[in-house]
Length: 154
Ligand SMILES: CC(C)(COP(=O)(O)OP(=O)(O)OC[C@H]1O[C@@H](n2cnc3c(N)ncnc32)[C@H](O)[C@@H]1OP(=O)(O)O)[C@@H](O)C(=O)NCCC(=O)NCCS
Image 1 (cartoon, rainbow, N blue to C red):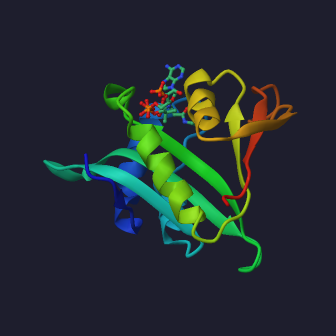
Image 2: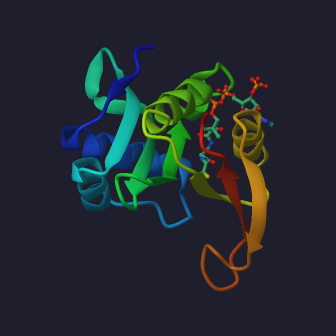
Image 3: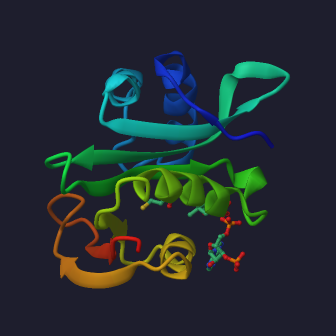
């Protein structure tokens, strides 16, 4: 599966996969993805269906913020189509984002639902550790999140 950089043309495909993966969890709209994919501080990597290139099979995105001399990063999202999970694709996408961040090293942060064992396992295996628990991060009465951090490379 070829991992490529995604541009705003992939917004509809990302939103379709998002609606499938995050149903009932306020999935991002096509407009939200269009803005994410167009933002100059963001890097999105993903996999397109070779037979139907408007279809997105996996995506992951990272945002860079702060001054150029001391950047910080935030993993914004990652999703792999259910049928393709467990084959190393999520790891490859994360490794691609982290390699890009490591070109100008800085701390990398993310939030993850406390019960999301596959994602937490992936992040821990890549050097993220739990910083703290954020109550109701996904809205009133919703689940808590772990904030996780990966130290700068080098
Ligand atoms: C999290 C997600 C992206 C992982 O993608 P994937 O392609 O299945 O992951 P990989 O096959 O690359 O697995 C990488 C690591 O994740 C962890 N992992 C994957 N599936 C797991 C599971 N069911 N239980 C526990 N850990 C798991 C393991 O550490 C695994 O490493 P290993 O293969 O060396 O054991 C995928 O499960 C997904 O899309 N989930 C729904 C969306 C989501 O929750 N996104 C995160 C929001 S913060």
